[in-house]
Length: 313
Image (cartoon, rainbow, N blue to C red; front, side, top):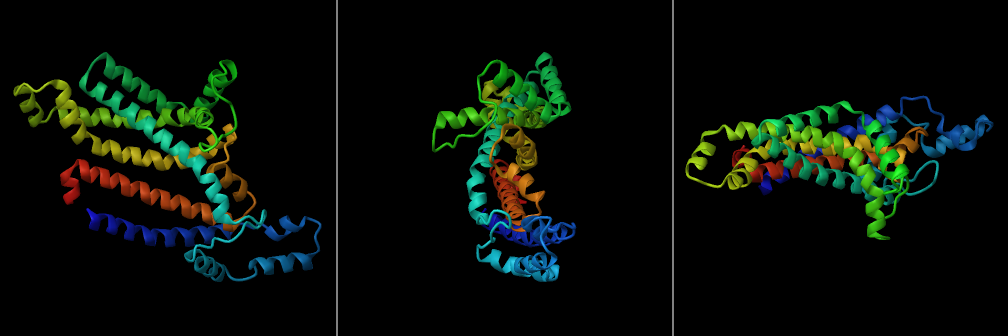
């Protein structure tokens, strides 16, 4: 298992280099006059040229990337061109907000999807039809529509949760929980629908296996068969989908953080991308790639632990 983890980490390193190079190159293509944005539209051309030289934008793109990479390997992602804030510090201040959403959605999705999927796979009939209807509705409803409905009902009409804002968990656990509940619920609907459908299909397939019929013939309680044998073998495909949902939350967080006014990585990405602030954007890209690699590694380790065949492979 340790060698497997080491191989997966080693495979993620080239991915970081490739994505960083491609991203930096693509960011350099748009014709955004960053220096003029910083100095103002009425700034003289000589001052604009001097500012471009100070930022290093007068050099070839490849030279700029190599210089950025050399500093990044030392843990220096530079400073924001517009706010002069250290990039790593700015990202560290916002990571807890986005991680709160991602971890919360993952926990809600894992519990709700496995319960609904297992229930539908074991109890065929009305329960199965209900879960399938929920899955279809969860896919069909746009996330922004679910978010707006939740805000209108739970925040505006009932006043159960705040509509906007964020309170850190270190400041107040209750305040933190109240500010992340609605964003987590809005992101969980689609994720629960997808994973529950996968769990349902996997449970049905496992329930048809010969060893399950053998366990039933031996007189084992149905709940024990489902919990100890069926779910263990049916969870691998669902975990893969759950991992993809976790990564997809990073994209959905952009919209949700904007709606709820959360100071997370999503809102930060929108704010700095429109300005063309390359140091901040590159820092955000690297953090995102690292999160994706770590999540995929955790999912593979869990699948290997649950399924010896996958571990051997």
